[in-house]
Amino acid sequence: GQQLNQSPQSMFIQEGEDVSMNCTSSSIFNTWLWYKQEPGEGPVLLIALYKAGELTSNGRLTAQFGITRKDSFLNISASIPSDVGIYFCAGPTLGTYKYIFGTGTRLKVLA
Amino acid sequence: NAGVTQTPKFRILKIGQSMTLQCTQDMNHNYMYWYRQDPGMGLKLIYYSVGAGITDKGEVPNGYNVSRSTTEDFPLRLELAAPSQTSVYFCASSYDSDTQYFGPGTRLTVL
Image 1: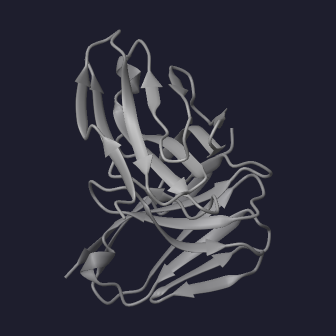
Image 2 (image 1 turned 45 degrees about the vertical axis):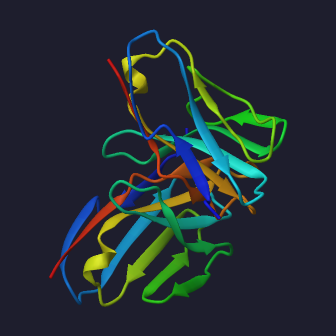
């Protein structure tokens, strides 16, 4: 089946640093979604991308829809302690409502 | 608005027992989803529904059943529980399929 591979698997960074993570697939996606999950809770949608090459921002977060439609990137600028969590990319298999979630990038911010 | 509510929060089952995980949303969303999340992993789609009376299989439907008799409720039934079904189960709802609002999860252990 389809898989979304995320890298890095985990990151330890200092508060104030910028963060970059990516998500790749062997198949094309028409929609890329980035979710954040905090401990003991369900994921929360951060950014949705709908067009190849699209760059979208949400505060300190910026995400890009790769030109090949097989990848996406999420950047967090000037990280703060509340950025701690697991970041998942996700998207629906082409032509369906079946959503695939990536393996996750675990972010820890050291104050 | 309560959003998406799930009951119970925790449950321990013996092998072979059955149970129903409840999910209710008060946002009048047509799309609803059931995911499972194994420790340290991403979410895997079990079943989804695009509206009352319509359900379809996701990536990992074996051992589970669902029904959607109303817009608000989307219960997940486990028949003959097995240790492999030990996981955290998340229900989600959406108005546009992409922006999914997740419940707090049900932590299930099968012994």
